[in-house]
Image 1 (cartoon, rainbow, N blue to C red):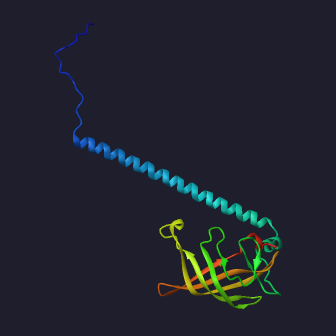
Image 2: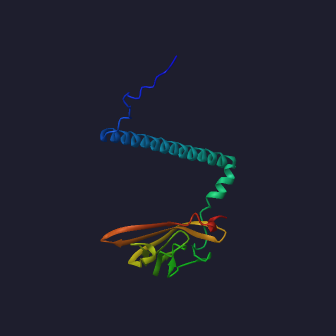
Image 3: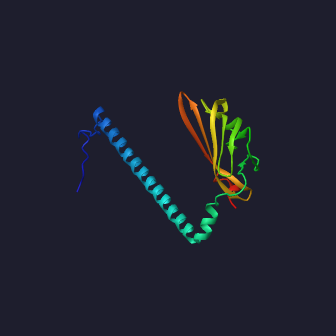
Length: 195
């Protein structure tokens, strides 16, 4: 059997893509890429939720291992009784009736200045002060302290600690923009408040 090659047969070429087929192909590629990205995000979200849930379960198990007495002793100091309570200083000491007092030790962005105490007992302390606060506008390093004179300051919730009776809560009421505002600060997370 002999094969003959016909050189006069029409030459077949690949059809050239038109603009509409190119656009459709690109749209299909973008659609597939979006779907892959969506699936990837959903996997990350599911993984994050699983990690959070497992962490919560692990923390609950660790907390349940301790006895009720040890948990209570390590988390909640008893209420203070006896002589006047003090306030914790940034240097780790304690004072009564401070005239000037830094509230946030890490950055000194909230302070009491020129404070006059009208009441200081074992249960609470009340006075008037100039409340100074860095508003961090436009950012903290470039912002100056803003003073709010004639503010009311209260220390309360004294707890018995290894340093004696210390107030654990501070509340400042100050006026800004014609409105009364309240600033709260808790010392309970400080290591000095463990017995």
